[in-house]
Length: 296
Image 1 (cartoon, rainbow, N blue to C red):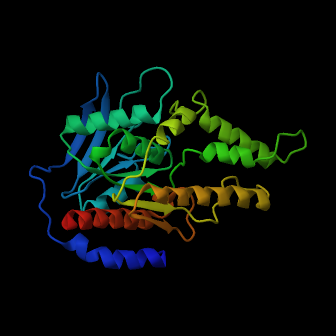
Image 2 (image 1 turned 135 degrees about the horizontal axis):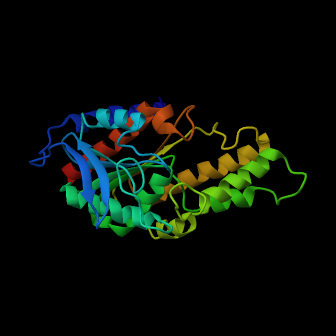
């Protein structure tokens, strides 16, 4: 475990163990909830505040995902935690025809939580593209946000910066460079990614998120040793990862109470590669939210 994160958890242990005034009627929730003619699957367990809501990466339905279920079970021993499947994933109905944006996902989540009677403010935990949606949710519903946990989260400028770092296409370029460019273009093209997500429009929406003041932001970053495209020449791979690490640090500007923890070895798939690391980051955020609540 990250040494700095261990120290922070020791400091926050007293806050986590302090008695809480639980919200009456915090019973387990598991069902499909209407969001305007469609249903979104939502599952919540545990008691306490803040209510922690998990938004997974592209194509992942966390309600039935073994990694996220294990994380939620551990977090639920400390506070209330909710998993939800975005439209078209897991137990949720398909999205309307056409492209989708992070704002659509934010609206669906907000409507599902309201329909289920799960009251905020929420500590949003977003992994990868789920973190992009979490940023837009926070911009759209600032009063409903207690804090953010950004788990190897997509930065609004991530794909444009990566593409700019790749050399111009040439017939002689190495296969891995071509594959990297193809991957980046496919992810950002709503006609080619599995959730029909317009990444460019979503990035513009995420840029509307301003500083959250004192609301805690925990940035859980994958190891700098991670390589997006295995086999890519090391100098180029290092440039791409250096840019990624810089973008992760930029999230710290979102709050006056922001902290970053970096995984020692795990890559982008932190919820499955290093679930304990993710749990520790979530609990650090829970403790920070509770500490602020005590001080107010």
